[in-house]
Length: 392
Image 1 (cartoon, rainbow, N blue to C red):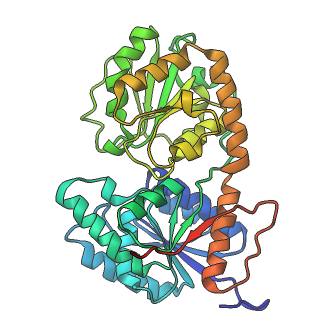
Image 2: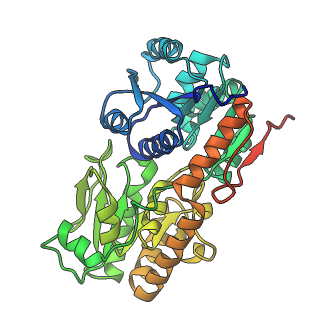
Image 3: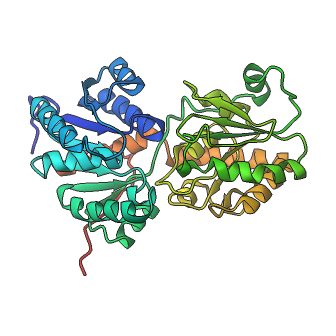
């Protein structure tokens, strides 16, 4: 499709489910950037905070009733989505995460250009027969995506090793570096925890309370952290299905869901995300943008998100509480190193993970799929990797 100067800009339909956590932040940031660039943006998602935030940005929001996981309601969800697509008449559909990707590809089946973005693979999230079903679907459903967008090369490689033969594009995650920025930790901490000891080291974990994010591993490591660094405090920021299953010793704080995690990053001495799997987590990027050192597990996207030289201090094996405790305690004991890591992390995010770069790379992909000539300004161009499906 070649657009003339008199043609209206193309309409893009994003489809999102889930509607919280990193997927919601990604869709919100991408929608904001696309609206600013003059695209007509519609979003189909269940009603809730994400829908409200998108309406406030000026996006056309179409309520789509859909559960987070596949189930008996799937046929009705697919029919409702097919009707929405017919009503919106988008030039391109962009599906975010496994559930939306399942419904979109079944509803559209290649009739219009389709982008699928897994935001971490569904077959890593489950075990047993459910994992086999999820993997079987991803192998089959890849034929109905004109492009599968991964947020890290490692996420793409995981799909390739699993036998998903897709047309790949890698676009690294980006965050709003104007919003996530450094601030004095003492002031932020005093506002959040006015009765806390300001001299006690504060470790913060921001993420949905669920098996993926590994807060149970962090809690298993915490006793050893406190043994090595007496007085250390831990705050878990977020909510989720594991809230009532997680058992924590005092003085671990469950801060619950927050509208804005920035003050928590700014208050932290160290930010930890002990995930079991990811595509490329946003929380470490956000923390580094705030000038904070991070400790993350060596899952998809983690090494790619860190600046050169950070892995030795900031990367631990997944599901290894002892290694996690050692890494946390070592950084808590070395404030100059934490400060240096935080400064280098901020510079790295500004250079490689600004959301404007991500949005430009996605826009370049859309142009390619719609037959327009790419027009990414050189100052913001991001090298994105395209790979056609490999065949045995």
